[in-house]
Every structure is written in structure tokens, then in C-alpha cells.
Amino acid sequence: MSSVVMQAEDMLFKDEEIKDVHNRLINILWNSFSFYELYADGKLETRNSKLETKHVLDRWILARLDQLIGEVTEAMEKYDMVRATRPIKDFVSDLSTWYIRRSRDRFKVRDQEALGTARHVFQEFSKLIAPVMPFIAEDIYRRLKGGKESVHLEDWPKAGSVDQKILENMEEARKIVSLALEARSKAGIKVRQPLAKLEIRTDALGSEYLEIIKDELNVKEVVVNNALEGDVCLDTTLTPKLEEEGRVRDAMRAVQDWRKERGLKPGETARYEVPEAEKEFFSKHAEEIKKATNIEF
Image (cartoon, rainbow, N blue to C red; front, side, top):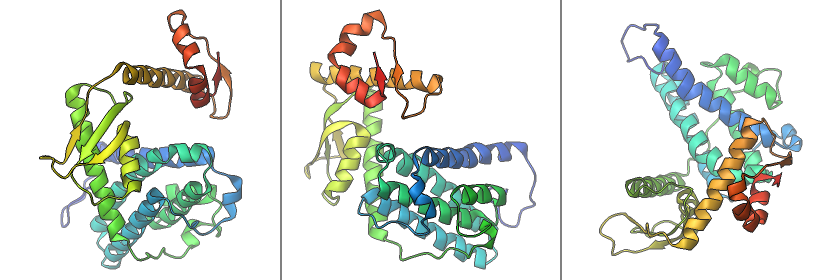
């Protein structure tokens, strides 16, 4: 309620605004935390500090956390609840749609840096939201087995030095992704369909950012071309080889949807009945499909 009211206005209770906050904040936060819990290693539960990490996504979300703590703390100290609560939604969106989603493969192999970073972020975030989302904060904190009996007995989190450079670089990478996705949409090519190449004009991003762009856009390579007129140029030419790779991705997606419908856990192996018309294709790509979906057929 605090985040949607304008300063100096009367506060009105509206069901629509509560539903909006629930759908665009609480649900997203809880889904992100549930995904972390699904893969969390019990050995991390006793840790009270973040792991040292070199991965750019980990360093970025930690920088975003420091930025958020600074913004919320400054506004809280001025008793400005509107400015204190509004950045929370943006952070949860970044955490879910960029960090958690881009780190899924690392979570699935139980990468300790990714899981340790996520645990640290959720724990510090629970302290930050405790004054305005007390019950959700308490639930997250207890599930993480925080050091105190309650999150409400914890000290207020302190922001570290914000790495502005990594925030700027990631913002540029996300801008490139957005422009290239728009080009995909105009060409009517879904993201699961691999493409050969993306050309970008900027040469300011290092290889770690280019790898994220490449993976997010499902392209074989990202090439810097300073002569481009626009910021990006996506090669939308589909070769037979690329189209076949796209069919493999579609098959994997269909199997994953099938697993989800049956409530299968990530580690569970299941037998999948391949449709008659797809048997030859599945047989040709059996090793790749089985590895990605944990099925037998």
C-alpha cells in the first residue's frame, strides 16, 4: 500500500492495488525463493555470509542488493515510506527475471557460488523488508535458518560499496538483449530457435557479458561491429541445421512441460512415451534429450 500511494495523498484501500502487489511482487518473490529452495544444498544453511564469487551475475545481484539497501535505508531515515518501498518491486523483478532465471543451469548443478550468493541475497533482503512485509520476511528468514530466533531481532543490513560499473554494463547488456528480442519478434522467430549471429555496435562489454547475451538470445556468436548503423543486427537466416536444433529445443520443452504436469522433481527419472510420429527424431537426438530432461524412452 505504501508503494502505490502518492506523497501527501489520502491512502485508500483498493482490492485492485492489493492484487497488483500480490501478483507483481509477492508471487514473483515467492516463486524465486521456492526455486532456490528446490536446489539449495543443506551445507549452505549454516552460512551467515555470502561466498566469494567471480561470476558476473553473482557480482551484479550483490551490487543491486547494496544499491537497494542504500536506497531503502536513506528513505527510511527520512521517514519517507513511499521512496523506501518502491525500489523493492524493481529489485524483486531483477532478482527473478534476470538473476534467478539466468542462473537456472548453475542452480541445477548445485553450483556453490550461485547458491551461496542467492542465500545471502534472500537473507539480507528478508531483513530489509521486515518492517513492511513482516510475515513474508519472517518465513523466508526461518526457512534459511537465520542466526537469530526471528528476523525482527536482526540488525539492519548495511550496504557495501556499490559497483556502479557492473550495474552500468549489465544495463547495457540487457538493453542489447531487449533490442535483439524485438528483432526476433518482428521476424516471427521464437527464442527456442537457435540463430547464427548477433552483431552489436558497442565494444565496451567484456566476454562475460557477451556470453550472457549469447545465451539469453540463443545465438551461436556475438560479434562486435563498430560500423553498424543501429545498436544491434540479428542474423535471422535459418539453415536446415539451425531448424533441426530448434526442433530439439521444442522437444525438450514438451518433455519438461510433461514432467511439470506430473509433478516430477528435477532429480527423478521418468519414462516418457514418445509419440509415434516423433520416434525417429527422438531416437536421432536421444542422448541430448535424455541428458537435458532426465527421461528414458
